[in-house]
Image (cartoon, rainbow, N blue to C red; front, side, top):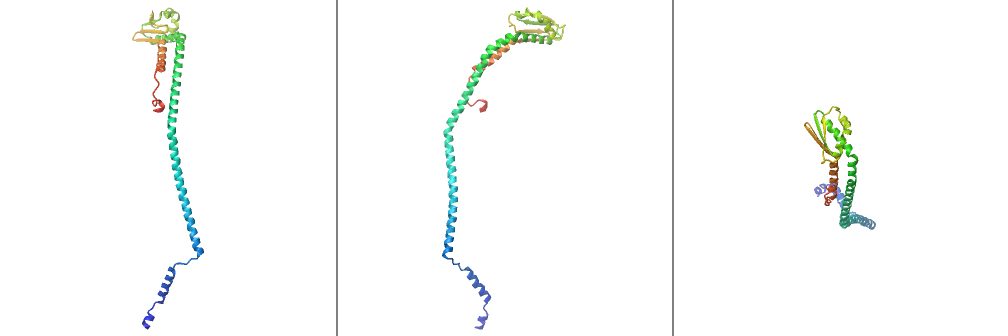
Length: 224
């Protein structure tokens, strides 16, 4: 008996009793339990509100996207019609402008030929004389209306050529030429100038542009 009594480890027993006492569940009063329940309820409400708010925002975003898609789908035909109307309006303006240029050209170009034709002819003959420097002869074909008056301006034209000796010039009246046209030939060279033909080519280009069909939709420079 004495052996068993003195073999006990009181320190270990005390530590074990303390450990067991620490493991015993604490006892809360009614107020503490109510406070804990209320805290848990408030936390749950806060989490629920946050989750509900996020879900509401997601639903609102989805609804807005759906409404935007529906509105765009309804507006697409109207937008396409506006684009088509704009293209047609632009084509109409272009056609009016081209027609206006054609009308003006038909009236103005003959007047330009009449007003500037002789000046352009004299300038071209002066250029021919300069090109024919060094050639013994120079044959110039002119309209009979101009050939008769050529000797009166021959000195000035020859001086513009920069060579007062110059080639021997022979003026040939040519009924096939208009008053603003000239054909010339010299040693190793020839030239032809027609101011009326130049004006007619300009008028033809304008007339072709006026009579050309409008481009199809979607093939203009802005749609490339």
